[in-house]
Amino acid sequence: MSKPAKTPPSFATLVQAYFAEYLTQQRALSPQTIAAYRDAFVLFLEFAQSRLGKSSAAIALADMTPELITAFLNHLEQQRHNCVRSRNARLAALRSFLKFAGRRDVSSLQVVERGLGIPAKRFERPMFGYLSREEMLAVIDAPDKTWIGQRDHVLFLMLYNTGARVSEITGVKVGDVVLEERAACVHLHGKGRKQRSVPLWRSTVKAVRAWLKQNPQLEPESPLLPNRNWHAMTRTNVALRLALAVHTATQPYPDLAKRHVSPHVIRHYLPFLTMSRCAARSRSFKYLQQLRER
Image 1: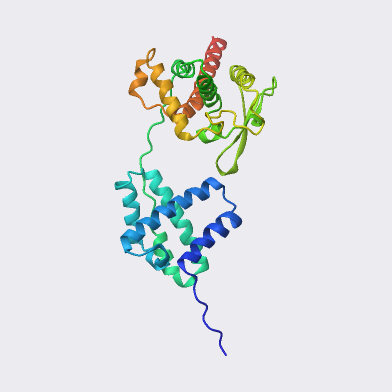
Image 2: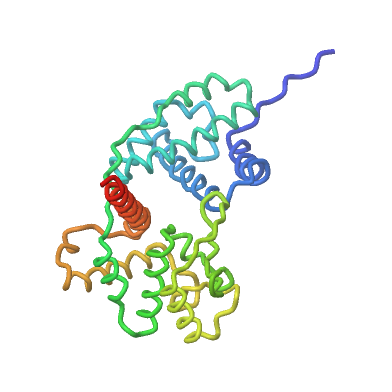
């Protein structure tokens, strides 16, 4: 007697297994990556409901046609005004789910194959902007002497010193900072659970020591740069504080008013500074060679 055919899993079962088992247990992705995939799926399901006239519980894997996915991606760009990079990130989340679903439901391989055929959209990468040393120092010194101003001063100095992402700096805890002489550094926790230690300049060490002395209640597990509620600052909070500092710095440097200065622009300054110093050393070396040849 032949065994009855196995019923393929439902779309809801696949989605639950994808997030509860595959992403968290099998791939062990970071909470930030899982949250990004979750947000992409929430947006897609909301769009699919309105487009197909079905509830989320009635949607099937066969409904994830290239036409529906393409319409969703166009919706992100045209109605939600997402950039191409965000569009491709949402597509990557859907493609990851389709690959998983194809392994769990072999009968839907044709649907999966068609969905995976949607390519990522190409886009022109803008030229990296950066600030001059004088402009950067003007932004760092822009905050006042209030508690928030002193915190912002340390914040901008840490961004300037480390070239770190905003999420890395806001995630720094007091225990992540080492202020010993000749060993001063900060331990950063980056994307994909990558960790690295970045040396701190003497000026940065001095500012951090003054900040910790002013706030003795901060414990090793406390955020180094908290908000008013003593929680970690958000990305939006950092962008707003930087915008205020840039506005103040436009008085000595009016050209800053014509430029969009984001935390990522500060991140570009460190490689610019490194390349500038390397170029200066190279010119000095060539000059010494010319003197020897003479």
